Length: 142
Image (cartoon, rainbow, N blue to C red; front, side, top):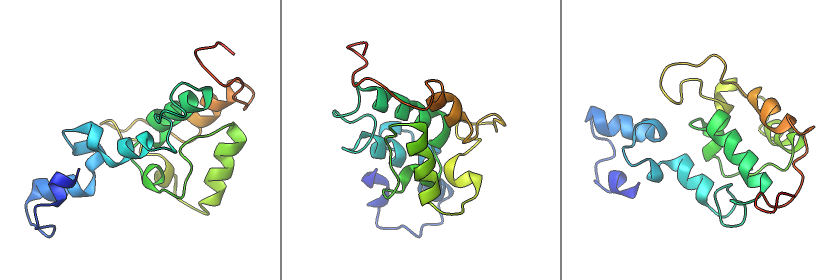
């Protein structure tokens, strides 16, 4: 994504550059370079080599794609990107202190507003197994 910021003119009045800087997750034509996608590929993210083939990584990727894609929560490196249980998710949310729902979830992350896209979806994703993500590898079937 540096190729957009190396122009030397971060205060440009160009509407396209302004939009790309303000909401790159939605507008960057090279989505693999969007900030939250890059964050999820880092060593502590669900798409990293350590987590990509684990249940924790799989469920955390679902949480990211289904709930936390786009808002500030996903790009804040002080927040966890991999959740081991529903309780772990709730602890992460509580650690952020009082926040608006929009800090955790952008209802229009993929275009039109989806009123069903809320942080409560995490309860369905992680709570489907009693809140615990058991077994270490998706491939082993454990």
